Image (cartoon, rainbow, N blue to C red):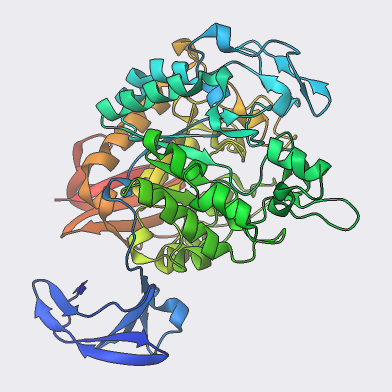
Length: 550
């Protein structure tokens, strides 16, 4: 592999770890920097550079040899597909997005969920504490109808939360992995949606709930009723008769990947869902990926994440598989497991803590712009090099409070947050409805995401915030068309107290990004304001600005 370093230095050494030793290789001059060719013998391949001014590792220049965790980490072999780098996602919760066929909607009280009848709600009703029991009747046909809207928005990938047969409205309690829920339109609707997306050059990512099943799944029912059944090995039962679950939720028994039967049904077998559905999807998001493992724990987690991703790519070479890694994603991703992760710890949490003054659980937090930048920079620098643009980077999701609600409806801060999302490296994700200003019905004093962050999409355009929609359409276009914003590296930029600033750089082209919730006055050279497409120079007042020097 050839490594290229953009630098003014005229000489340098590549230092890389091999079999516990540090090896050195001289670099040769190249246009605008230095380069070196080196065999990559292991993944991750750990390296840094020795330049006249010091050691350059993932976290910048250091005077002494960095620790291994501050080396650059490069993955060899299977990598994210090109189309998943700096792409634009749109997340849809199918029951709440759009209804295409009314006759498919569940009827009020049609079945019992954990002993209580489900409830069918009108589309304009706000979500209530019933959560999983509340159905609105959105379906895949409705998503198909909305493709012109989504195409006009400019999104490139639809990520759908679970669509397989389940008794709840969230469908994270699967009871049949090989059947698209009939209330969503079944496999016919999925195939129609997939084909329509492909015709538009768009892609589809499904939600893989492979850490646990629903308690109503026939496999678990057999395991529960018959200790001698083959399915008993697929779950972890304890001497008192209890069993391992997801987060203590009894309706979601946890799978045990030490079981050969679990391995066959979820990884290696031809009917493993991650293989079976790859004919109608371009990838999977793995639910609670950090928990998948053996014996009721996440033991051998990296091994099984790697195996699941490999199984998908054997069916579709350019599949993308990323994970819900709710905490520090770095160790898992450095183990060459997945194509990326939901960027909670390294983006969503610090950004929203800075802008809202509260963490995701509602606790007061006091982060200033510089402290926020240090968190973003630290996580970015620690990521494997090839995954920096494939991280699913977000502000809102079905699991956390919506960004606009957390900001108490402050539209200007919300717009700043989305400008930052699209300016930062990674693949930005719009949670359905954010682009039109969808918030939550619960009072701010009642801090909660699910179920209130799952309100139905307001299709009456009179309810839309057109100012927000216009900005997000512009941001999507910039992300898709500006090389520095799509694939550029991240560099620090000094801009004064209270301003979070950075540079994006790609092949000599730069974008300077500035974010100041209380506003700031900047002195700039001649350049282009990318959001207004106007030329600016000299003193500029702004709360957020994407600026291209000319």
